[in-house]
Image (tube, rainbow, N blue to C red; front, side):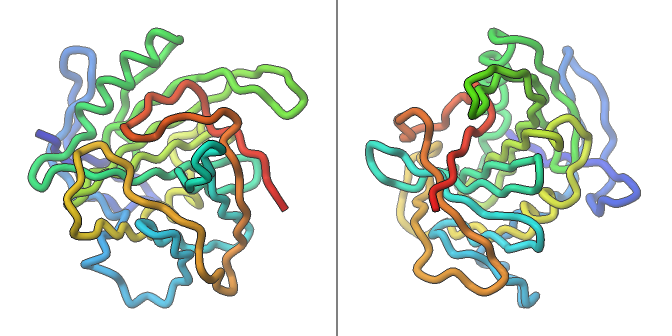
Length: 240
């Protein structure tokens, strides 16, 4: 069963958690993870958020919100927040009512990433996360190695996976992107869904002032009916 984990630092507000190594992995005492926010706890904080269905993503000055689209189905499959040379892809999924699924998903991702290269499991700002280096194709066709952080957060009947890549992928914390993730609201809905199914995302009906929004398409059409094992960080082509 998933137990929420965390650590403290000078600029993080997570609860204290004791961290120990076990069987080569990382374990910790339960700790409260502050965010993302369930829609039942929608804050009255005056923050402007972009409504893309199951996610309400806050706008932040200097950052850009882009939507990733499956070319075959024309469906929105992820939200990516761009902060300079860093990016954070956010994907929401259905989860069981009682247990979280990050432990299981993380184990599968760990195995997949190990087959491709090095991966380590550490305790980060949102609990246990994976850190790896993946091959990314740049717009000019060259292939570079890019550090990536894979975060997973279990909520009430939902699970959010976030992938931080680019410059911020090589750091222990990414204050700007992590603040966006903490302030993101997840709208699970009441309809029954199988654990691991993507929660529906859609194009916004209205883009509020203060939110910069673009669209993007997947470089390769893929099926998104279950939790994917990422092979690389997000590659985004902006469409004006």
